Image 1 (tube, rainbow, N blue to C red):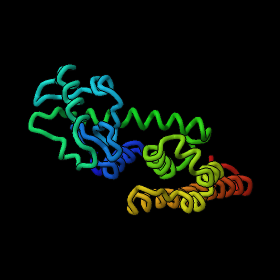
Image 2 (image 1 turned 30 degrees about the horizontal axis):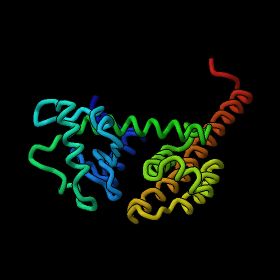
Image 3 (image 1 turned 180 degrees about the vertical axis):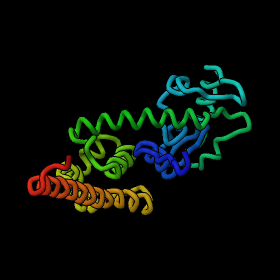
Length: 219
């Protein structure tokens, strides 16, 4: 159909922003604390965790032995280096499709944590969900729920300006903190728009009822 345009849902937009903020590295590397990591900041705690992912050696699927050897090689290298330091011509890699699929699974798991903490989570504005997903991915459930009590209290009551004022983290870039704040502030606009649309609908229904009472229903 002419003029049709696909609009990404909030999970797809969250995935794209996380790849932007966290970076997306298809090969194994060591993060800032020395953990073997891949994709969008996905920490691999063991060889077995790495073997559970569909790594490729060139154009073919890597064997479990190759994945174990690559994990061991990277884990023995110095920490505190850029991700490119750990890449060799024969480094195993994940496809972007596999990285996106793994990130989606992680986001869905974090959404389950958010639903447990916030029973009305599904009714929140999409921008508020995106802000919460960014924070929980960065901080973990405990870091968000216990480390930001004023933010969580504001989210529970829909006080989005207060949520925006209490979402700043130490560590993420100023740009990332500013983006998260903007998402909470956008939730204010979303709710005002929804309330205005609801009010207009009620006025229109009341007007129709009044017209029907005065002039009768058209035949």
